[in-house]
Length: 368
Image 1 (tube, rainbow, N blue to C red):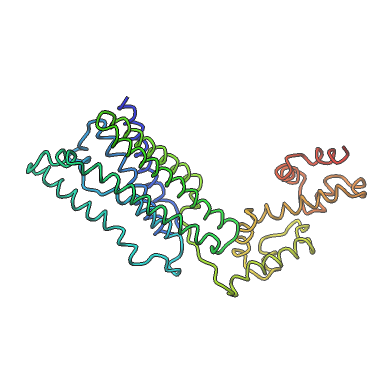
Image 2: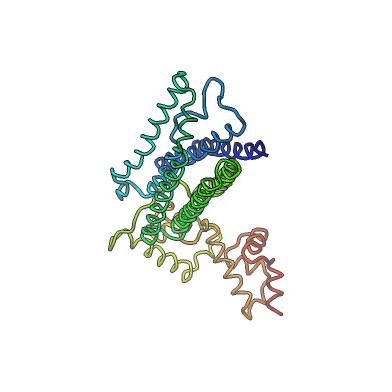
């Protein structure tokens, strides 16, 4: 049974390591956020990796005595997470202070302590050093200390995200991204709380059920690592962005509303979408902006590409025309061309995508 658990935990850890490697080769706009995320995920994966090896009674990997290796991973998990969250804001916002780096001190001192034990063990000065430390109850109390430390840091990360939630510059996509960080943090804090509860149970039941309860902790961590992997692969565009905060009464903050007004005028009043050959550059020229800014604005405001945005207006125009008395005089293709579509095939495909019905089915539904 323990071997099966060890394999599950081991594969969770390996997935964490591979994810770090995979994200390393991905394009990243915020390298600092990536470095902190890697510290968080690598430390969490290393936690499971060492315990999986212990359960499988593997103390060395080649000539490296890994299970006793003095890497203070337990005190780096939440530190990496905390800095990952805070590094989402640009350097100009000066969110990270020099005092924040004091959070690395517990890992530094615990690393020194582990190094001392490591040297004594592998030089033969005291081969029972880890067993003696365990019997003294150090590891039990250390479990509480690092879990409470983690709980505190993730709580601070959630407080940070909540505080700046309404101050993030951007539109729907930016807000959705920030909401995802909150979800990411809430899931992690639930995992930590469950770890604390299980640590208390381990303390109560004693050595008899220690291995079983700790196995649950490791499986819980593995599930979280698998979930992090899934979220990171499906929402990798959320992970390493750089956000800025709104500035009161700045001219720059008025830009989105000006763009929105101009865009609305040309789409709803001028109906420029009826031009079959309309390009992004044409619309950008009309509203006096550049292609990149317009493309980003449309995506962040409507979560659509330029072509999807234009086609949405064309579809609405077709639906409006189909409800008029004059529609009986024209074929569906003529109506589609009047709305800006250049071919029957593209019209049918786009109409089905937006409405779930073919143009003919939609027209028939209006008669019922």
